[in-house]
Image 1 (cartoon, rainbow, N blue to C red):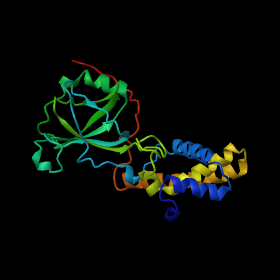
Image 2 (spheres, helix red, strand yellow):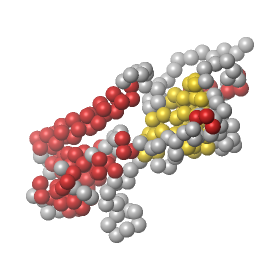
Image 3 (cartoon, helix red, strand yellow):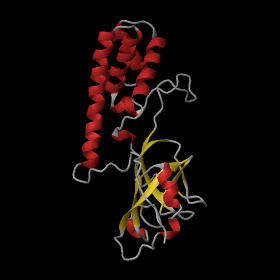
Image 4 (cartoon, rainbow, N blue to C red):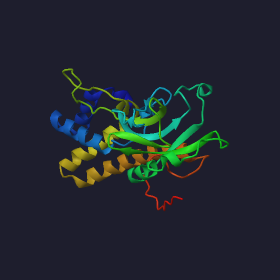
Length: 244
């Protein structure tokens, strides 16, 4: 399939030929609707390199949420630097679990009660959450502290404005997962034409392709390790905090 679809214009031509339509603008509208269906797809090509995408804490110990982020995978702190050479960091090394914004604000109030990490494992677990346009961490970060940020990037919609006449002609999703574009566009095309049976058929194909990607991601994330989803979801925790 991908051999016939090298860019956005080729995708439009493919759909026009498949459906017998002659309305390019209508097909572009259906492509846009398909892209709205796949905004959260977790393709390997959308993952950052966490050893080059490094956040630096400001004077309040907060790290701005990257402008190109779609959703986080894992954040970790290797000590004094974000380098892939862990010996450069003084430690301790922290893996951050994502929690809810209410929880992170509550825990931050107790930040100065956290013990200095002495005589504990060199790698331990911290917490982070979104607060406004920033990420907040527990234990708190000092100004200039670096956190390795592993996340899925947002991707540009086809034909969106990029300063050229034609707009965006390609992206990593079309390159690595063209079936998503084809099935999603055909579903929206037939749905718009009120052809429910054909729309449902292509939606089923789209869902199967999407679920296959998600299944491989889940196996890659959790097989061979713990199965507690901590880095993506925001669970609310029942807790009582007491101070003596």
